[in-house]
Structures are given as structure tokens and as C-alpha cells.
Picture 1 (cartoon, rainbow, N blue to C red):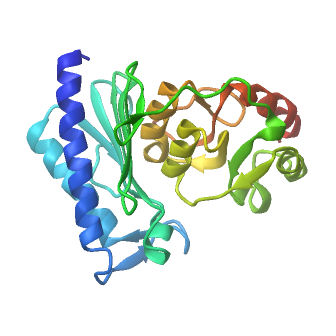
Picture 2 (tube, one colour):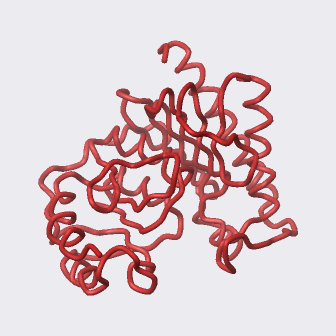
Length: 269
């Protein structure tokens, strides 16, 4: 991707992300139509759909040759990441949005020929924007995020780990996950994959592991974590496929190998 065009694309995408976030804040207490998708906990609201439509309409008008991969049905049916692809989650953490009115994010990743070029994770209610361009570092608002410390060890680590590993685990023996939880210093669950990726990039968590995420949950986060020296693979260290759901481990490299070798591979079903 031409760097001048990438800079222009970054600024345009940033403007849309901030505009969409302002709209959500202004309407946060408006009545919502809430429905479910895969199950009773898989929520979608009018705000999810309206926000995705906002991005879709602007992208189609401004960049008609670009493609969209998104959660709520306004995207393209893609079999490859050829060309420029916007991967969008209009509200990541919809349950938090519905119940808490906070702890949710807009997530936008822009990929070109399969390479992550631009990433935005916008913590809407906190008005905090995480952003990155490939090979140009990652930022929290206007402050550059430092590279992750390579002095970290697993016993001093905080790991994002949701409950699905323990109550609906199709991948790894739950006893191995229990051992991992006992080994790390602490575990956390925030309910928004995008914000958990942002926490890893910022170094306030040392890893985030989950069983089953869609491309729009992780595309922006991968770009941002990469720029702070982190790594993102599936839970067993294998490459992520952004055209399907994946297990995910995004992590400080200083502890990633031990998590994979001593726990995930050990307990793999």
C-alpha cells in the first residue's frame, strides 16, 4: 500500500471512528431494540446495526473498490483478503453496552492483500483511541505505547481469560486451564475482545486467550499488538485465519511460548 495513501486512509478512518463514537455517546440512553443471534447471550442492538451501516455507507461512497468484512450483515462475502479490506466490529462488547453502558469499543482493522496496515480500537465511553499503522508504532490517544518488556515471566503475568475455557471447552482439558490460572499472578475478564487486545498492547495485561473469535473481533487488535512487539496466534501458536473463527492467544512474547508448550499443547484435545 502506498504510504501517502495509507496516511490519508488512516485519517479518514480515524474521523469516522470518532464520529461514530460521538453518535453512540449521544444516544447511549436512548431506547434500544435488542435481539439475539446465535444464543440468548449473543446480543445485537439497533446501535450495532446503525453504526455498521454508517461505516459501510461511507466506505462504499469514498472507496468503492474496497471490501468490507463485518459482523452485522453489511459486508461482503469474501473468500480471500485480496485488495483493501475493512474488518469492522461496530460495537465489540455488546453485552457490556446493553448492561453497563461502558466497556465496549469500536474496532476497525484495514488490511491490504492480507497484511494489517491500520488498526483502531476506540473505547467509546472513556474517549480513548488506540491506533496503529504498520511499522509506525501504536498509540493511546496521542501517546506512543512502549515496546512490551521482555523481562516478564509467567508467574508475574496477568492473563485475560474468559469463562468458556472452563464451562464449554472443546479444545483443551479444563484441568490444564485451571493449572494455568493458578500459575499466573492473576486473570481478568473484561467482556470486549478489542479492549483486551488494547490492554495487551498497553502492557497492562500480558496476554489474552479465548476459545472462539470472529475476524472482526481481532483484526484491529492484531495490528496494534504487533506494533508494541506482541504476537497473535491461535491458542496453539498457529497462524490466525482472518476469514474464519479462531481460538486466539495475543501475548507478550516473553510468556507466549511457555503458555503454548506447557499448557495448551499439554492439554490439547
